[in-house]
Each structure stands twice: as C-alpha cells, then as structure tokens.
Length: 338
Image (tube, rainbow, N blue to C red; front, top):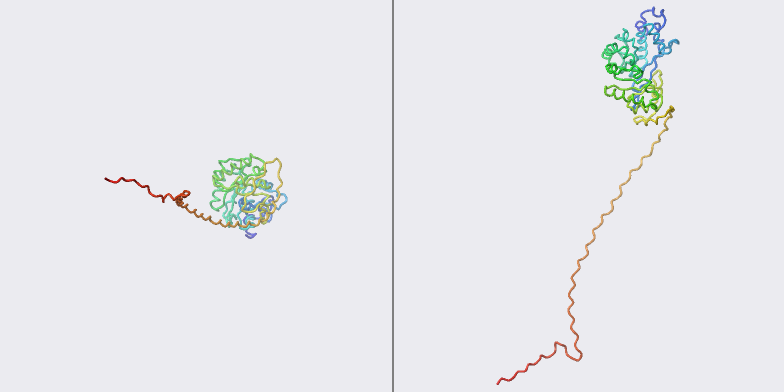
C-alpha cells in the first residue's frame, strides 16, 4: 500500500498534523516488533505477536502511548496505524494483534479496507481479560461479527491478572487463552500457581481452547508449564521481540519430552544450556547360538537269555566194583512143580 493511500486513509487531511499529540502520528512514527509463540511439543514457531514501538521519544513506552491515545480519543486511529505497519512488515505468518477496548466502539476496526481482512495467514485478535469484563457487550457483538466476517480468531489475553470472570470469558468462546505473567512467573516454585494453571488448562481443554504461557524466562518455568499441559509458550527465554520476526532459541532437542521440573526451591535457578549429547554407537545384534545336537536314544540292553539247565553229572563208580548200572539182576528161586 503506497504512502499516498495511507495518508488519505489515516490522515484525513492536514488538520490532524497541526493538532499534535497521538493524532499527529503517521506510519513513519510507528514501529512494530514481533515475538514468537512456540509450540511446546515441537519447539517450532506457531505464530508471532505484533508489539508496537513508537519512534517518538515521548511515546516510546507503549502504556504511555495508549494513555495519551485514550485522552485524545484516538485509539481507533492508532490501532489502524499499528495494523498497517504490522501486516506490511510481518510477511505471511500467523499474527497475533492486540486490540484496545476503545477500538471496539470506533469505526476504524470495522472498516472493510482494514489490513486484517487481507492477510494470507491466520489472524488472532487479542483482547485483555479486563476488557472482556468491562466491555463485555461490545466484545460479544463487535468481535464475534468481526471474526465471522474476516475469519480471525479471538484470544483472551492476560488471563489471571485479577479481573477474572470465568462466565464472561466462557461466553466469548475464545480460541486461545493467554496466561498472565502473574501466573507464569516463577511458577516452578509456587504450588498454588501450578494448581490454578492446571485448573485453567483443564477448563480450556473442555471448551476446545488452547493455552499460551506468557513471560517464560527460565528453563524451569518452561518445563513446568509444559508438564501442566500448556500448548504454547512465549517469553525472553525463547526469543526477544525483534523486527523482522526472530528465530526461536529452543533449549531442547525437537520431538523430545522436556525434562521434569527441578525440585521446588525458594531461589530462582539460572538456566544452564544442556551439554551436547554424543551419538552412541549401536550395539551389534547378538547372534543366535547354534542349537545343541539332539541326544541320541541309548540302545536298549539285550534281553537276558535263560540259562540252559546243566545236565546231572554221573556218580563216580565205587572202588573195586562195577558201575551201578552193570550190576546183575537178582535171581529169584523157583521150586519145581510136582
């Protein structure tokens, strides 16, 4: 989009430049940096959040910039300026864009020529939890219609910052819920914060919403929120905001589980980068032992043959006589018959 069209669309003439203040800002005064939002399972970049950085010295702090915009009733115009720069410099990447509550009642957000209507990648519209509480009706009507018309997804930001109203947050049906720093900072050392985050994660899972943990600065915090089931992480540990969108410094090997959180201690633990893991040579496969030869069946012992009866030995002859078998038969005396 050329500068003349931007000047016509956002300036509306030269009178605003003469007024000064936030209304005098142009696209050349607005800078945008990007911070990655990282998938906890893979370590890959899921999307980037666009963060404004005004080049005017008096408005360099974003809270100060929006404070003056509210006073000048210029939040709608400022938001449009930020989106012009953000979508022009981000490239075709999924983008999280913050909306100020006062933009919901402004004509700028719903204009058909807004850059969010033409972005090729998914667009996520962030509204703070406090805005969902104080501007509930506008959020319910304007954001729902905007998401339906543009295909953008709704994000509730800073959840757990102290304005919680679960019923209203649930009624908005957000696609993503971002946990506030008050819950994630030092969560590895605070059991109560872990209990709250665990409850929020379970609730979001039931509602079909995903969870982002903001402000992650240590490996212990990253490991802890991962163990609690958080889907995405964002913070200085992974990447600082920069332009163009920076690369992620994922501290763990991809596709591997994160190590369990360290034991709870009162002091903060300084993260130490893990030592490189050397590849271990594969152990050669054990060769199967040759089967022992089968034992041959022993030949049965031959059956014992019955011994032949020994014939009786003849009795030795009597001395000086004949053998008993040679003795003459006894004679019988017969008387003559008369």
